[in-house]
Length: 391
Image: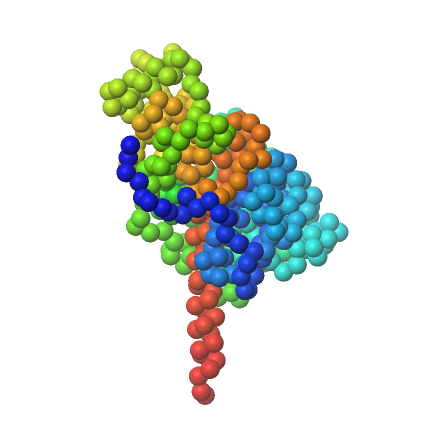
């Protein structure tokens, strides 16, 4: 049994009162999923003694919207609809009647968040890469910014989105140009989430736009996030090794005989990579998927969590010291979701895997929005001091 830290933020079981505080931070979250970006914004707001107001959250999947509602019961509007049902106009076109209704309902917005579906951008999607219609959804975020005019826009995606094109132009370049024309300072970066305290090797592309009058540069936020503290797997899930429960979150995945034998082979020999001859025939030969059927290490971050975390045939998802793959609870922790985050709306193991695997780690928004709030506060104090000086 590994030694573990007595307590830390992922083991908190009681949800903080994110809707309590003085000055509100009002957000809209599009393509919201279960609410990873919203949770990060909530954590950033709480750290700055501000309350979170959720004017609107939208996701096409009903179950995602249900999980979101359960975790953010104070949200004013959570909708299971296409984002186009709220923002249906073309970039640069007059605001439509639908968009006028959305704007009136939402009111003044501080932060617009969104992680558009990335299947069209992923390097794993060889058939439709960079031509998928989902790529156009990226620009729905820009249209929403055009309608709502938030102070901050944060768009999350996979790094390969930089290579995507829509209507003959890169979507990131097009988004940047349009947001700049709207009066935003815009910057982009690929962020290593393990530098933000997430116990997995995961990289995400962020497009960050801040209204020019806010006097905070997005480049300064990218430069200020991260720390020297890297979190390993032991920190994230070391206390969950021997949990026995019928709760779907903690129920261990049941591997078939050959995979149980493969895992036992690695444990017995204290190895982490399965020899080629012990892989299924279809996974032998020349390949670059060394991590498949591999065992995780306690003192390193996990590999990127996907919806396949419950099978060692989907990646390096074997537990460091048990002949099993990861549980849903462990995967949620590795994504950075505290124990108070409620996934109980998911009725099956498959639904849990999809919900957790597709989620955005909250630390991403927590770090960037937290940095923005700190910079904005410092800027406001500095301007106040300058005004107060005698002529």
